[in-house]
View 1 (cartoon, rainbow over the protein chains, first blue to last red):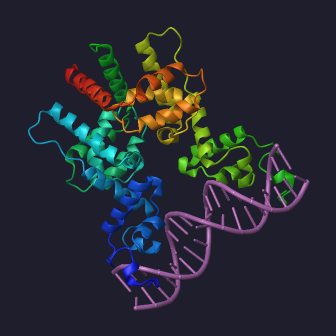
View 2: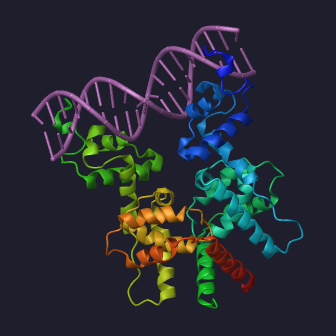
View 3: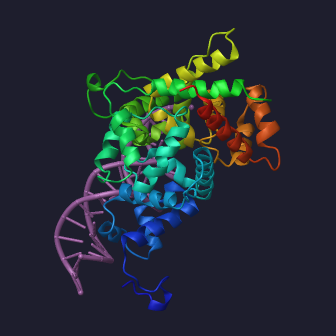
Length: 193
Length: 193
DNA sequence: ACCTGAACACCGTTCAAGT
DNA sequence: ACCTGAACACCGTTCAAGT
């Protein structure tokens, strides 16, 4: 192998797998941020040559996409039976908590164009909450791409939202921007203090 | 020089300057997105060797920071005498319009840690509007760094905000997160439709 | 099938040299 | 002072070769 006695290798030999690759990449990101995720660095973390990763992950972009999804899977869903308003509050708070633990995940979520299912799930909620702030995505394009990769019977509500609104010809998010803006401004003006 | 007859050079010879470098970088970004901004590519845009840029810009990071600021300078301020609520609305809309024209600028604004004065100015407003959505910055640290580089008599309101709130020991943005969240949820619940 | 070494075309940045 | 060529230490990725 590498000439070192087996006892000095960092881990006992274990076959590589997509899962081990993604876990290693996550560790690298937790230590050094998103920019530290590098084919060569992740390979080193696994005591393996850089090229070996390509047998389990098509390229770097896919590796980074694969790393974001488990983070969002870690966000617990609110208990059943909660009233809608309270459920939203619980969800928003636990999302905030998980993102605070993996600070690098938020910026990734914003920039990725091929998010996994868990990312999509939470992204849909966050998208609604944040709409007033960042309505700048090229919605038609992004939405179309997402729909293409969405398995037929997954996330029916997200699918409905995309098909019935975002993909309608002439759909323009300006009106939702104005709606959200007025919502916040009105609420601020009417606040008790 | 490069052996080509002068007539074939793309532009008549002109001395390099920080300004020309930043303008060239902006053009590169408008064409190919943030990731296209590269020391070597910007140099090529200017018909110059990569190393020449280092005489006008300390490094790539500073170059990217320098590129964001002019974009925000392009956001017009609302006319004087507007009522506060209407002024905020106008400002939010024109911010949205300029960012839509330079799509790459928003992601840069989020990730930069050494923004220029114009970026700061608008960032402060956007920060307030978006607080419910992205309260995850390490506020003490970012705020401290910003203050250090802020000239003494610039942006007094931003300074006041930072000193009186963000830098207070034990300051925790959780409470503002909850405040913003409730504001939106209450408003949604009370909406006419 | 899975892992690898060498190679290719790119990066940012330093340094010594040119004018 | 400003521009440059060569070099260094890094990238992602391909390809042919090993097992």
